[in-house]
Length: 255
Image 1 (spheres, helix red, strand yellow):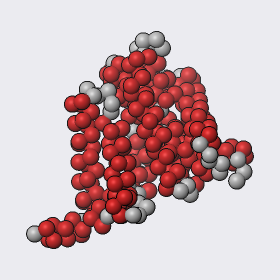
Image 2 (tube, helix red, strand yellow):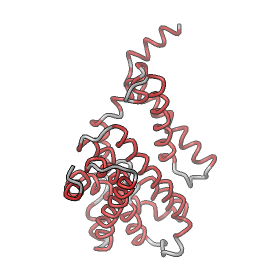
Image 3 (cartoon, rainbow, N blue to C red):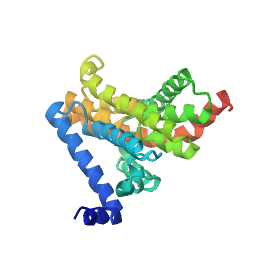
């Protein structure tokens, strides 16, 4: 019976991948609601769970692709591959209305560019402080500080190593968690109580999960505005990080 079940799972790898990811997401949102009352967003817990499963898979298989190196979970590698990842990013970007962005005014546009650039520079500085000297690694980790989506997109485009891409995801995850926790604490002092400031806030920090959870804990009515700006932030980061920002990094670190 166990052999028959193993063969069924082995021959339907992509379905197993969807089931595993769906189970992790369901459990993550359950933990978020039950134990953190939504303050720690389910998506951040899911990313952490994915990293943990990748580590466990790597330990057991001795490979380089995490849990996907285990034959029964090979479909996770396809589901998490570049094709579906990039499709998800494009679909998210198309969910935002450029007309709404124009109505929000110049401050939000400035916040978008400033947020991406400042986050990239901070992430790159941390990478440099920890001994990275090549432009590809610095740019990838810097992009991870933009968001944990921009990091792997940049790393894949530049040919970064898997360990550097993992660090970029971890950097974005830490940022998301910090934004979740800090938003309701600082909301009153920074005037985060109306749609316009919510869009500026989302455009400055840009992490969808962090901004959405933080604004939900502050005022649920502000969530759509902050998330819309954060969505543009992700798209802008995916455009700038592997191109303009990487070239600027390479001018400073020509290795």
